[in-house]
Length: 140
Image (tube, rainbow, N blue to C red; front, side, top):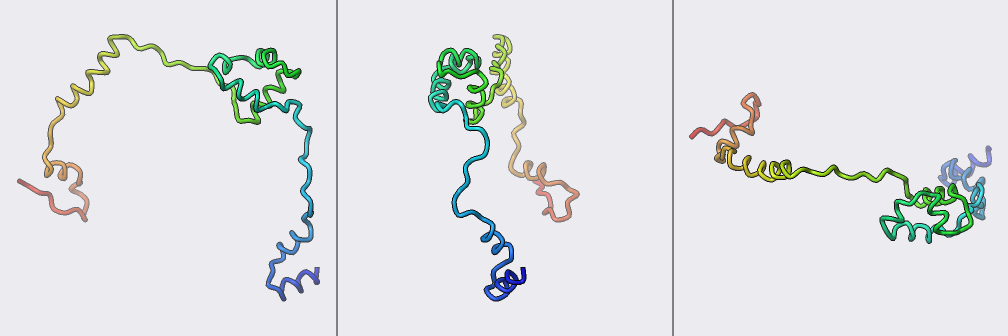
C-alpha cells in the first residue's frame, strides 16, 4: 500500500483509480447464469404484435402456435425479457344514449351560463386583497 500512496501523491491520481486499474480484468467476462432456452425471441415478439388475437393468446396457446419445442415458461420468460407484461384486457363500459347527450350538452350549458368578466374584474378576482405586494385594485 505505501507504493500506491507514493504514486497517488506524485502523479496526482486518486487511490481508488489505482485500485480500480489494478483489479479490473483486461478481457470482458462471460455473462453469469444459465443461457436462455428460447433463442427466437424476436420472432415471438413479431408474432405477438401482429394482431389483437395473437396478443391475447395464453402462453400455452403461443407454445402450440409457434412450435419452437419449448414449454410455456420459456415463452413467458422470453417475453418478459423483451419487456412484455401480462395484463387483463380492459374495455371502457358502454355509455347510454341519455348520458352521451348529457355529456354533449354540458359544455354548451356551462358556456352560456358563465358570467363574462371584464379585464379589470379578472384582475380583481385573481389578486387577493391581503397580499401586501399586490398593486391597488382597479375600480371603475
